[in-house]
Length: 154
Image (cartoon, rainbow, N blue to C red):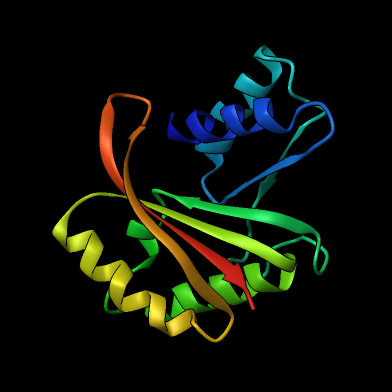
C-alpha cells in the first residue's frame, strides 16, 4: 500500500513530460502498484522494475535526476546492514545524473534518527548533505512526523 502513496503523487508532478521508475524486490508491492498505475492511467509515466539483485539496478549510467528512498531505509540501515546500504547508494550514484539528488525520508524517531545519522557519513564521498528538515507526511494510513534529507551527487 505504501508504494503508490509516493509513486502516484510524483507521477502527477512530472506528468506529462517526466517519468517515474518504481523499483522494489517485493513482488506483492509491485503488483499492488501496477494495479494503481492501470487504474489511474499512468502507464506512460510510471515504469515498474522488480529488483532481482540488490547490488545491480537495471538502469543506464547517469539517467536519473532524483532518487527517493522513503520509508525504506529502516529495512537497509542497521548495524549489520551498513555495507548493504553503501552498496545500494553507490549503485544509485552510478545511475544518477551529474548534480542529481538523493532524497531520504524516514519516520521521526530516535532509533531511526540514530541509524540514518550513523549511515550518512558512510556515503559522504559520493553524496553530500544539503538539507535536513522535519515535516509531516502521509504514509497511506495517517499523517506522521518525518525527517527528510536532501543529498547532492558529488
